[in-house]
Length: 255
Ligand SMILES: [Zn+2]
Image (cartoon, rainbow, N blue to C red; front, side):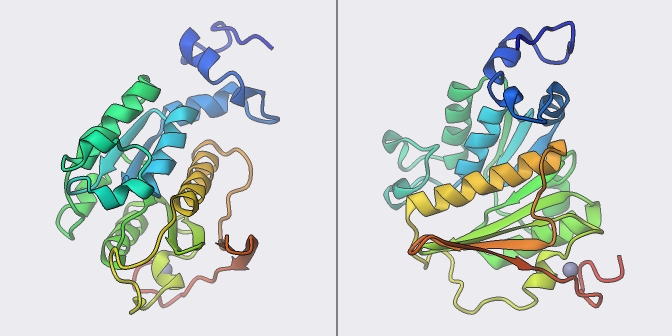
C-alpha cells in the first residue's frame, strides 16, 4: 500500500517512507505512528539497557527523547553500550548518544542532561514527559523515578538485568502496581556496577522495553500491565508473573 500525505499531513514524505514497513503491521495504522511522533520519552540512563531502548524508539519514530545520564564513557562500558564509539572513551555519554541518534534518525529530537536523579530535580525532569524508561543502575534513583511517575501520572517501563537474567514490567499510575508495590525493600545484593552483564542480554531487554513503550504510547497491542516478564537466557526460559498492588503502598496506595 502506498501512503499518501492526503491521508495524514502530520507525517512528511520521508517519514511515511521510513516507517512504511512498520505501518504494514496488522492493526498498526498511521494514527499509531502519529501518536509515537507526538510522544516524549525520558530515557533514564543510556547504557546497555536504556541506550538500546532509545535506539529502537528512535528507529520506530518517537518524536522526542530526553537522555539523562551522568558521567563519561569508559572502556568497560563498551561491551554493551551500543550508542557509543570507541574513540569517545573519556567523554560525556549523553553527547555521543545524541550524535548517534542524529546519524540514525535526524527526525527525532533529543535533549541531553548530564546529571543523576535527585529528590530535588526528578519532578522537573518529568515535565512534558509521556513515559519514563527506568534504566538506572541503582534502586535509589529508580524509586525516585517511580514516585515521581506515580505523583505526576506518567507511564514508566521498569527493567533490569543481572547476568543472564532480566525482568520487565510497566507502571501505569492508578492502574498497575508501582515499583514500590513489587519491591518494597531494596535488594541488598544490588550493588551499582557490581553485577555481571553481557551486551546481548541488556540489548534484548532494551528491545523489549522499547516494545512496551511503543505499545503504551500508541495503544497498539497488549502491554504487560500488571504482569512481570522474567527471563533467563542461560536456558532461554521466559515466564510471566502476576503483580499485585499494595493498598498500603507508600507511593501509590489508595490512589
Ligand atoms: Zn505502589
